[in-house]
Amino acid sequence: MSKTLVVAGHGPGISQAVAERFGRAGFSVALVARNAGRLAEATARLEAQGCRAAALPADLTNLTSVREVVRKARAALGAITVLHWNAATPVAGDLPTAPAEELTTALGAGTVGLVAAVQEALPDMRKRPEAAVLVTNGGAALLADPVDAAAVQGRIMGLAVANAAKHKLARVLARRLETEGVFLAEVMVMGAVKGTAWDQGRATIAASAVADRFWDLYQKRHEHFANVAG
Image (tube, rainbow, N blue to C red):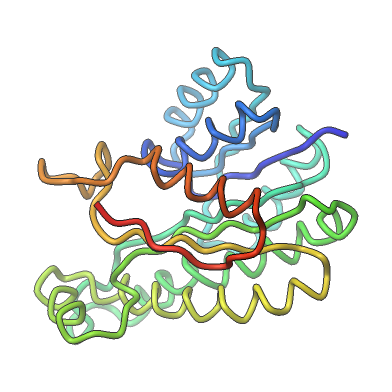
């Protein structure tokens, strides 16, 4: 039976590494993000590695687009086996001055879009014992004074709030999806990833290490949460 991975929120770091790791295991891969040009380049890279792939541009802060792109992935590559949610929007950096609508956007990308994607993919996943939802999160989600201070100083307050909400969502969704026979795992990345927009020359985490952690959780299917630190 064919296996399809949907990577929602594709970029050059974690999500590309996850796509390549699952591609090596025989998955077809649908890459989803806004930038069509970058998606085409990433898809070509996967195909050069022998992976069947599709580039599907979409705005993951728009729920109609989220639902449509899951349907497009199914039409292009077959029933959805694994959904990797990597979408995040670093807006509403300073909450007292940012437009309140930006916080809605941040929460939409981090949480509401994930729910919409899961709902759209769930009919496929219920039929597959290897089905899973994989969620990338960041350390700004943690409830700790130093983390909160860093979010304020770094003007990533909206992202911190969205990540905290995503962490709770992943916990309750993992428990609920178990009743549907679907596994969910969240990896919280505790630092900057090399080669991404967050890398200011001091990043210590390799995207491949995060991808390997996702793969390990996916294969063993008994832990729902893990940290990766540099």
